[in-house]
Length: 197
Length: 362
Image: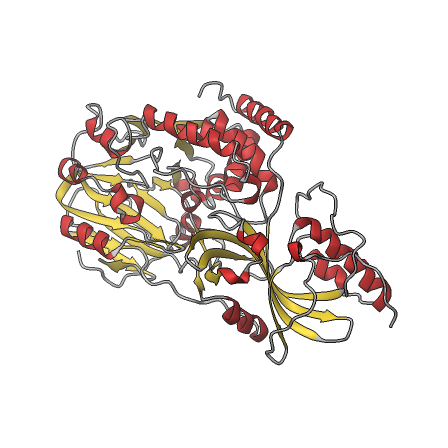
């Protein structure tokens, strides 16, 4: 198999990941590109690579369930372009939208909304060590994240069962965005005849 | 007044009044039958099994068309009180919609306009508000606003039946709008769910006037030190309806933060029946054992719509294994909705209390 260059991750973008191989061993290896929204672009690049080099066809469905079609994408530059790592393939088995409810001591509680099936919402308590240092800074009540469980295959053919938490990382609202919202609110209130408070 | 085994699908007779409280552990909905087929719906929550608003499910189980609903009240905009409300409004074309005055504010409309398009797939009650706004625009439906001591509705030709709002006060609205304005400026807003404003000053408390009896629905209104907000503002009013209530929907899921002793001594009958819904949210579990004791000691009987969270989700083996490895605990966020139903003849008499789907006496 030939080596190639693909977008990769840095320690700063390491995902909040617990990885176990199919025989239950905790796996090491390079971090996966799922830690942030801009790294989703990285993941997409991996997908293109995997599809072109390996003929992997499941990336399309994987990508469609990993939030790449989220309504907003950040407009920041990918800081990881040009770096090298071994590409991987992630087959999503389960995906939730998470909302942090409270944080206490070494754990946090979150509500989980099933985004693949129709199972009832769950409330789970996670150890904070499940999170990368970067994501720990985002751990406040109300913070939004995705939680994926799936299989990760690497080029060597190894498969790990993996749990990945990825927090939402959108930039603060810009003044034009807020102004647009204010104008939309004025229009709405006018349409509804709510001219007074 | 003991709970009895009953058929939930039997509708009240035209001469029966009914107060139903349905709550699954996160969210609540109250339905009141004023007699002769006239109902009101207060707040909304979703049945996790059907994914539908519990009010519509219940009316359907009684073989009633949602057109029987004459009034829908959204007491406040917290997620646990408005989920599915847009669907209820769409299904009940004869209903008038009443909301807290805070909902028509420019501040809240701005917040909705900003946040709703940016929310993740199913994470916010803000989307519910946006759906309500859209419905109002589409249908040009009238919207009314609750205020202290305002009569919201009276069945045609029934002078002794009415629904009054007792809150929110002007001061409460002013404080809430300041809080909402701050939310719009929060740099973390795009990355978090819109937080609830605390304490809750703007909830709409309702006084349901029926022949020979009244029902006080406390929503989530909290008690404060300020005479112009919360329960103290209601107690200070000289214009609220006279009388005492025989049924009390205890505010804020029985929390001590919604407790004011004067509410019990001034607004409620000595042998009041209390009902409330639990609130299980992260590490917050309401009512606490102390709350239960206090409410039971002040009531002739007290009921809770749901008690024990259960786990019913079913995962494939690899997913189940990973959940066990990655979490400390996990359970259903919302148990199946329990239901407390109270009925009595319009002409008077004892209340019949029926408990369904996990509702319990405290």
